[in-house]
Image 1 (tube, one colour):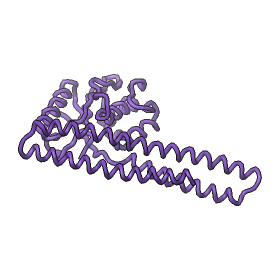
Image 2: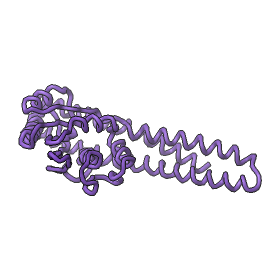
Image 3: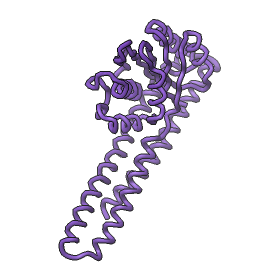
Image 4: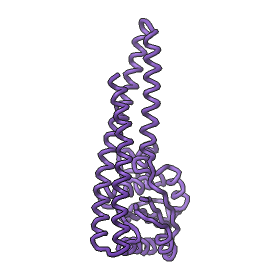
Length: 266
């Protein structure tokens, strides 16, 4: 399963020791390290990026989590990564996009006290022990969260709610007269505009998921080309799992996209 891992260390030097260990675990084939960043909270409480995740589809999730931590925990909002990350609502939307809920961010925030440095990484791992053992040896506290389908659930919820709202408004419109009819039409138009935005969001997420899948498979294939025996077999199996998971998610998102399309046409 692909996971977001946050490891909190007492010092910046320990954090870099931890980030080095994650790269070694990747080279050994124990995990697949997709992207990584390092952030620190100084003694005054200011949070800043010490090492940014690489730009591109693979760095999106780590970039949004590190940017969100900066925006919410007292750092300069101007350097927060991701559209809308300067507002609480925007941060939660961005986190939903990559499959991390605000409860995870709150848990990290409690651990990231002044003077602490944190490694944020997106990894593919079968077992938690390789990472936990190496991080604990370096003095780190590991927090992890499986990258779920928070965004998919939000799209589905918003679509259902807006379709129900439009149906109710249309029922009222059919019985209304005069000025009330005009007001109801304005409400219907506004609800359809929100539904259109949800429709566009589903389409954009399908495209973004495809980009992330392509980059993850590329990373896994590069890792597999250097591996042998059981390690290679596990990596090849992980490639098949990534493809299968993408198909399942994209089919679900496409279904939501089609439903909103039909509702807008009605």
